[in-house]
Amino acid sequence: MNKEYPTVGGGDFSLLESVMDNIGHGIFAYSDSRERVLYANRKIKQEFPNAYGMGTLADTFSDCIRSVNKNQYTEIMGENGRWYEAHATQVSWADGESAVLCTVYDITEKKMYQEKLVHQAEHDHLTGLGNRLTCERELESVMAHAVSEDAKGAVIYIDLDDFKSINDSLGHHYGDQLLKNIADSLNSVDNITNYCYRLAGDEFIIVVPAEEYDKLDTIIDDIEAVFSRPWVFSGVDCYCTASMGVVVFPDDGDSVSDIMKKADIALYEAKKGGKNKVEFYSTTVGLSSYRRLDMEKNMRKAAANNCDEFQVYYQPVFDMQKDGENKCCGAEALVRWNNSQLGFIPPSDFIPLAEYLGLINPIGSFVLKQACRDCKHWNDMGYEYKVNVNLSVVQLLQNDICEIISDVLDDTGLNPRNLTLEVTESLAINDMERMKNILGSIKERGVRIALDDFGTGYSSLNHIKEMPLDVIKVDQCFISGISRDDYAQAFVKMVTELANALGVTVCVEGVENDRQLEVLKNLKVKLHQGYYYDKPMSRNEFEEKYAKA
Image (cartoon, rainbow, N blue to C red; front, side):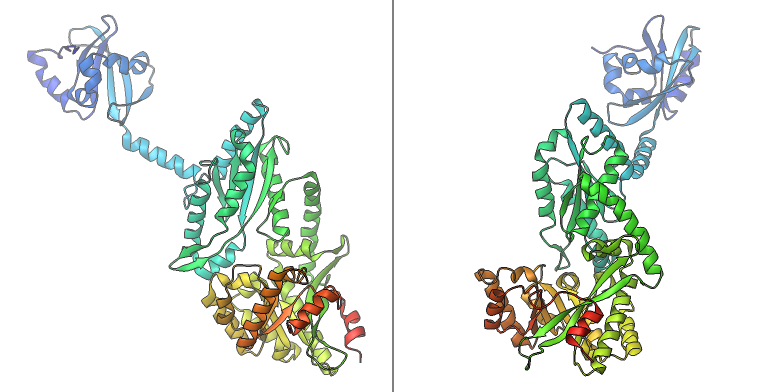
């Protein structure tokens, strides 16, 4: 039922009432002693029509009335969804009665601006996901809840594989769009919506709260599915895989900093394992992190000292169609690291670290120059050998890669036709046009190009035709069971026939026994490489067996 409020007063007070009605913010007076509103101006009636009409204005602003003379401001959301700030002052009303005067200001724009600033401080500007600050704050809360419930949760640390090469190939605009698309897809995975964060660059964190921990395997599968399909930009398919490190709380740590550190350790192990993998943190992995720190320190030192601790080993390549007993036609150059403190370190350990630290360029340049120098020496001895050198994604995308190769050839005097540069098929898939230009420029210098690990990535057979190739190297995963695997035989046969039609040579890796050799001979595969013939060896060992003076 409507309640009639009195006015300020008649006669002499009509002007004052008119001023109050047009002042631009709400004003009302309340009598404590009589527990009633003495006056409400037009703004109050417009902004709070229900409270005014039902006589509950004092109830709506009860916090403000109680704060009288405390120099405090109280916030309230109005009936129209807007925000207001109210301030109360003790006054003498028109008839001399003591009253509380409440002044009400619309602060909606101010509130929205403040919320925008808070959102910007707590969220990633590109993807809209929570940032590191928000992640760590919310993770602390989720971990505390898990402990209180005697339950478990998990953190999944995601890092995109070779995102820099995609960014450089397609351009930053497409790189940013890719990050936004990935963020949207991750945030849409069931059971983790609003628990997805972008830390920086191409790194994401997924928090799996205790309520969803029993679905951890499914969540990981769903995340992997996100990266199993191409992303399409302007009609071009872009492939991007991801490595993941997983840590369980509170089993693996009871603090946010400890969990984040161990998630990073697990992620590095996934990267080291060949990328596009998931690695769970374990005590063994944790112990290896200390070795990683030692490796990092010593690798930086070795790279700074002209790569003096790195050695180039050679695994011979054999031409099965070559006349005579010595079917060796050259070798693949493989880098090895023998550190004075840590000893001999497997390539599977230090090459991912070199890529991670950005040291693959100086190490790769060292291998290229040493391999060309050694091959020139063999050529001068009368052996028409070729040397294969692997180029990483980072090396190939250097702006001056063609000049680097030309300088090495000039310095060593090696015939360009005796240098074969091996690139992985994943290099070319995301920007075929750019790769064609780069590889084409390299071929113009007379250097041969080999596509390594063929069959393990996303390439279509059409890419073989598009790329300026001389050699296709079929990955060893197809050779290991080729004597009993019909699919592997069919694959190698198909690649061989296609290569012959295009004038490209096929090389198979990982030949290890007579049964494999027999099948490959029947398929007329020309180039062979593997432990059946010989293991990687030092220059001196190679020359002792295959390049005697």
